[in-house]
Image (cartoon, rainbow, N blue to C red; front, side, top):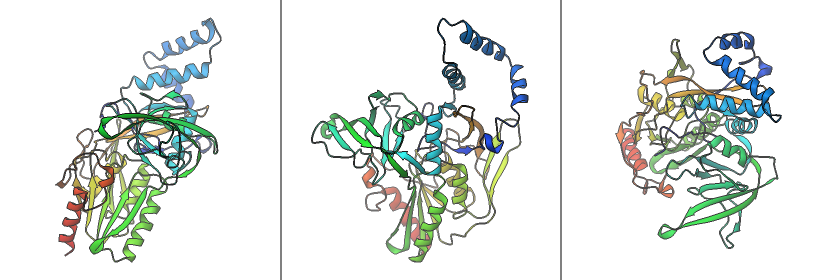
Length: 411
């Protein structure tokens, strides 16, 4: 299970995210910068911070890089909030985040998640056909090509990534098309041994395929959504059209291990699964809660089950909560992660950005899922860690339970 206190799901595995307008569009922080700065100067301690920065700029014995000093001060201020989801993004990390949210970026094609157990981030998935899938092993000789899900990421171009946040790791893996990158991983082998492997590859354009669909026997469709980005809603609609053409009688939507993503994408997917009405509520500081609704929907018209587990988080919990509370289907599996806070990304002068928690979200029935998560209607455990067993009813007990339930309802 991901640590609830320290995990930051980011990069290609995004937290619930709302991208704001840039300076050209007149969005924050430009529209009222003067008034905001005047109000800030009246806050306790802020004048001391400005004085300290002035001392560094003018009294430090060497000429400081004030852009670097200011970025460090801002990063430290965000860390002081004690919120693992609020952080400063360097210009490179911000570009990487924008690319992941759009579903298109240049890199090696891996999804990474933090690991509290070893301190080393873990490769969750390797995208088929990506540079990572065919990477050449430079040491030890004879190692089969390709990174694998479950590999623990040790270093990128010789720089240790231990304890590094996911956005920073993804920004190191990203880069101009055709440039080379060297990745070192620890890989568990038979008998409990661990091998240190190094792979070299060239970065290439990556299009993140977030949706997979196929038809199971007796008219049950299987639709897996791995995350939510700008391409996801259209991909879900196309997949459902394809399943309907094959005489869909019931549908399983797999949100297991889905860490979230772009809120608008999850709401757009809800149009295909949930009746018109509230999908979620946002509760900002000191203001009324705001209803996020879908008004025009395409009725699914068949029984629905949604698979969830302890790594279903953020925007994926928004969609699962809407399905449950609106009576659109049943949830099968294990309680979700419990990340019920919303981040917004504020671009800054100089190319960086601040990712800041600005609100909580509630399910349509007003439930706060933070930490506790979302409980399934039908609890089914998935023993062990066997990614190869997922998605096959014969070896996936949660999917098998959902299929049995849907066949009973569709009979």
